[in-house]
Amino acid sequence: MITKAYTEFFKELNENNNKEWFHTNKKRYENDVKGPFLELLSELLPMLHQWDNRILTDEKKALFRINRDVRFSKDKTPYHTIFKAGFSPNGKKSMLPGYYLGISADSIHVGGGLFNVKPPELKAVRNHIANHTDDFLAITTAKEFNDCLGALKGDVSKRIDKAHEAVANKTPLIYNKQFYAMSDLSLKDYYNSPNLKDAITKHFKAIRPLNEFLNAAF
Image (cartoon, rainbow, N blue to C red; front, side):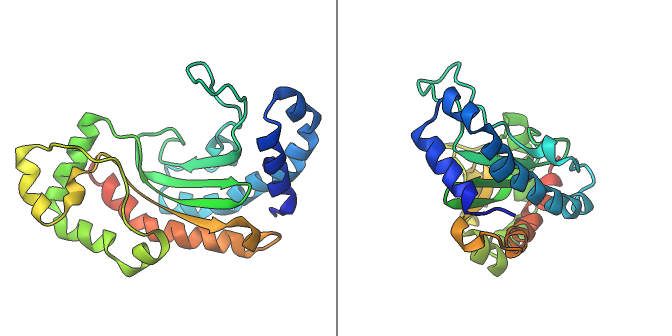
């Protein structure tokens, strides 16, 4: 289970984000951060795989590296101060809709949807929304969706194809270039708690209809 030690590690890492400190505290990282996080993923993955058997069941393959890619960044700190995992068909870096979990020192970030959308896939999604607008609105305005995740988020285009402009009268979300929803929970409320899995599951269930709708576009 995730404990207060998880928070303490990331708070200290935030103040000492360098390789020497990290190597000195590697055992804490393994025992208090990576181990409990992977255990949590192993509890969540069977359910996600049951929903979509293209989602891999190996928790290590869902985990994003804590090491930052600093090659093209002005920020040269070597480590992320949040642990992240992605659960999408065919892997965490898939372009298909999926589920997301990130846990920092103080917060749990949970949600999902479609984040990385290239022009051909974006056109397919907009066509799908245009052809099934009422279904899309039923999902994004559902009480469970809004209570858990709030409004649908994403970068917005300034222009869309003329074929899609009529749909904008029913939903301006047709202008979106991304289609995702996220919620933030306080981590301290879930120290040593079996309720953490249930809270994350609740949010994944709320995003599931959106993911299934978006997957149908491809």
